[in-house]
Image (cartoon, rainbow over all chains, first blue to last red; front, side, top):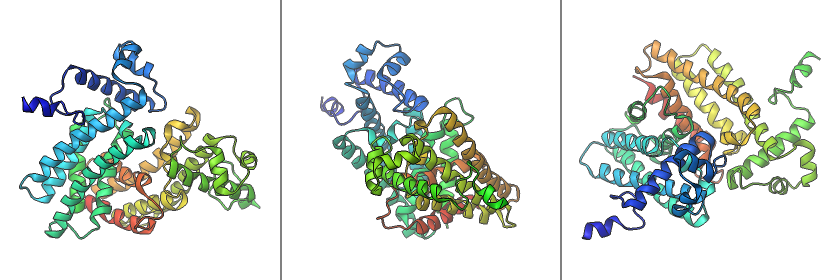
Length: 206
Length: 206
């Protein structure tokens, strides 16, 4: 039962989820959609519950308050992304393929998992202790992107650049999707992932 | 005295400013720094006044409340940017030079004028009527960027792409600077403008 024990670790919301976690994920997605449509400040727990057809009291069984939901959103999305990113960078592939896959993974994580919610970028809204944990995970992801860019520059497959600054441009382009993406819009998450990966990797090439 | 009359138009905060406007700009910059350091929600009018060495009552002479300051920030920054962008696109220059100049202008506007404040991206915080005005100006700027990208694609100087989606990637990379820029950081606004213009225009080229 070692796998199950690992899967249940409190700090890993991405593993095969038990019922309570599945319910939390469902609430998270409803909340993410509310945050996207009305902003974090403009969404109440009552709004989120209504969107899910739940009684607010039922929702409070899973989350103490709105900030709790936001933290879960941010933390879960980063766990999903970090897990995928670590697999990507371990593959024996050229750096341009790695950066492409990282961009695609981040777009999908933001637009599919979180429905393009801006929730994960509302950093000022969580407590300082939780913010430190989120920032540590975000920094770990950013380091993976930067390392892939550095690898390409060192191998002279990418044009000379400041890998840290260039990574910030890449991450910014993707993070900003949370500001404009609408599920009813002209582009699917897949089309956005394709267009962005193509454009951003071309910017790296010599 | 025609110039002075034009300069005083209420909707143009970018012209040679009379004393009251200069004072408003000073308050705006202090507020932008406060919003950058503590977030919009985390900054009070009292914090902003303290940062400027002003009595809060004095600040209330110029702005009714914090939302008023935020709106002025957003509106002023967009006026500055739109004016510069319109000059850029009128120049007889190849599209890659235009896009480079637009990226540089936007980085400078955000990091120099607004000290890297995230204030201008806190769209949910202003009233719906004001938000419509801000969005109209933002859309006008986005159209100028998109038109320059389209021009390059049509002239076959840029790789085939969806100009609207690619423009969103460019704008996102630049807008995101408000999330990570610190005046005490390793890069000057100028260095960021250079690095971003280089990387993003390379992404457009065939």
